[in-house]
Structure formats: structure tokens, C-alpha cells
Image (tube, rainbow, N blue to C red; front, side, top):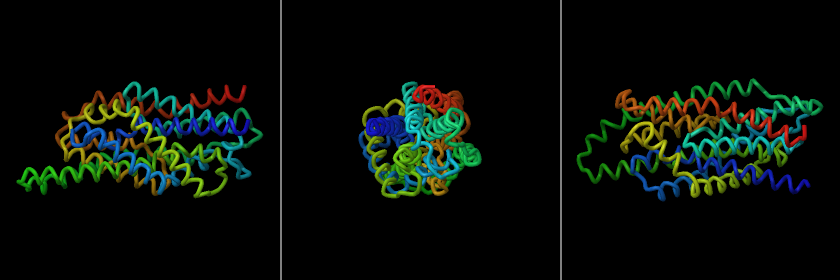
Length: 338
């Protein structure tokens, strides 16, 4: 029975990471593909390589935050490993919501979905099994929530600054062939950087519950590396099988992007997300790239940004943690036989 539950947990974790590839890979190369700077095949090759690097080298930072720091008990054990069905409920809840959003072509946040699902599992355990002594750490959640608000704003500002800074020197290049080569290099660097940040941020966040399930009662870096690699492989499958829909929304649905605008948006988002990872704070790569795309688009003027599309995406952002939390609570309720 224990082995069966472990297999189910791995499958649920694979499903969540698959969703990152299907939905959030657009954050890495959606602007480049939408701007016809990179072909779809070349773009997904960049995503797979650098996501794996980010997941293995730095995924452990957010993995620990989500797996150990949101729900705690007084004796130091991890409630998600003590009650594995609650962990499975959290993983499935996050995955189901992101799959639904992907089908609707809404680029929502897997990180927000996973954090919301963990909160739902924690609330369920504190209500249904008070003897465990599980409690949700609202102080930690407060820091994360503030970071979620700052994340798209920082990305928008950085993208705006980058576009303003790079435009004058590039305009001095009169050789069209040389200009195109420089822009291609900038796009590849920015896309690779965003993919690395996605691996470090989103893979760590989405597999934190898997890490907790398999005994994350204290730092075990070898286990973290293995789970990071596992998540990276699952993400690669998601990229190959189901990522075209959201790439189109990010690449063309918010503002029309030329090569330099795509570079500024990608790089602004990458720097923002990677910076939050250094503080072990799981933020939304989706929010960062959408904010960056909007910030870069504002250089052309407010009319270049689709307010209606941003409004629809904004509603999805607000709903994501709430829906994932409620779904996690309900699934956990069913799994625990209450």
C-alpha cells in the first residue's frame, strides 16, 4: 500500500511539472516565437536544456520553502509526509487547475497554484486531524504574497529600462545582416536566461510537495537534486506535447513584439524571477513575463498594450491560488474519507 501511494505521488508530481512545460514554457520563448525570432523547435530545445540546468542547480531553494516552510508542526516532522494523501491532493489540485487554464489559453502561474494547493492541504490537516498539530505559517505566506505583487512591477520596470538602454546603440548599426545577428544572439541569451529561471523557480516550487512526501524533514540535497531532475524531465515532456496554445497568447495576444522588445521582456522577467529565487521566495514566472511584456510595450505607448487581454489574465491570477486552495481542501477531504 505504501509503495502504491508513493507511485501515485510521483505520478501526481510528474503531472504538475508536465503542466509547467505545457503552460509556463511560453514564459521563456513565447515572445521570441510570437515575434518570429525563433522557430518553435529551436525554442523548445533552448527551454529543455536550460530548465534542466536551473532545476538541478537551484531548484532546491524554492523546493525547501514550499515543502517545509508553509506548513509546520511543533515536533519538527513534515505533515505532508505524515499524511501522504493530503500531499497527493495538493499536487492533483494544482495540476488540474493549470491544465484547465492551459486549455482555455490562459497563462496562469503554476507557482501560485502550488502554493495555494499547499495552503489548502494545511488548512485541511489543521481542521480534520488536529492531533498532528499542523499549522499554516501565515508570516511566510505574507512575504510570498507581497513578492507576488512586486514581481510583475519589477519585471515591467526592468523591461522598460532595458528597451530604452539598448535601442540607441542598436540603431547605430547600419549593416542589416549584422543587426539581425546581434538581435538573434540577444534573443537566445534572454530565452536561455528565462528558461534557467523557470527551472530554478517553478520546478523547485512544484516539486516541493514531492520532496516533502519522500521525507523532507531536513535538508537532503541529494534528494533535492534527484527530484529537481525528475521535475525537469516532466517539464520537457510538457513542452513537447502541449505548449503551443499559451505560447501564442504570450507572444501575440498582449502586444506585438519586434526582436528588441522580445529581448527586453524576456531578460527583464528572467532577472526578476532569478532575484526572488535567491531569497527562496517562489514567485510567478508568468506574472513576471506578462508584466515585462506590458512594460516593454509601454515604450511604444499605452495603446500598444491590450488592456482587455491583461484584464482577463489578471482575473486568472487572482483566481489561481484561491481555486487551487479550495480544490486541494476538497480533494483532501475525499481522500481522507471525511
